[in-house]
Length: 153
Image 1 (cartoon, rainbow, N blue to C red):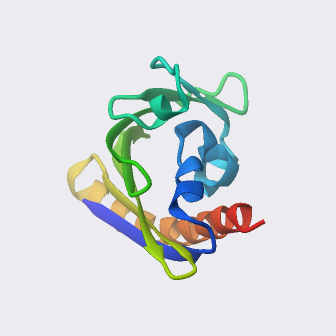
Image 2 (image 1 turned 90 degrees about the horizontal axis):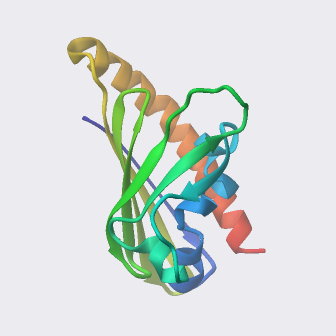
Image 3 (image 1 turned 90 degrees about the vertical axis):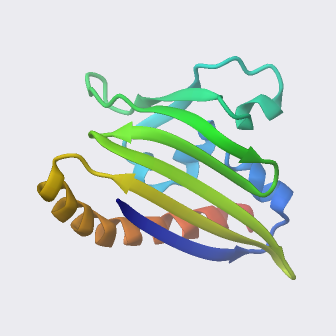
């Protein structure tokens, strides 16, 4: 299993940071999804804004290019309002869990982004996983900068 963990301090309260963590907001700032997804649409019922963050909420990604067969289905597996949210998805046969942790700090929020993933294909998957970790780390740093930029406007 591979893991990438990155943190950044944002000059915004946890409540404001939390609002950006809804699944349908991911393409706005998440570098990996910006280029591939036109949007994210909830597949579970959303009657109130809070429903977007509840455990069991599901959504699917809408590819930018028609005919693309990217099937991306998200499910929230853990949710502690203004503190932590985890969702899982399957991407190119890799099982991925993304966790966002919010901690209040003197000037706003420390935002930690943790991605755990498991590649298929035994030994080949382990080699690919190590290579992926290096590239993904840079991608996550860009995502954090995008996130911070949006919230500090």
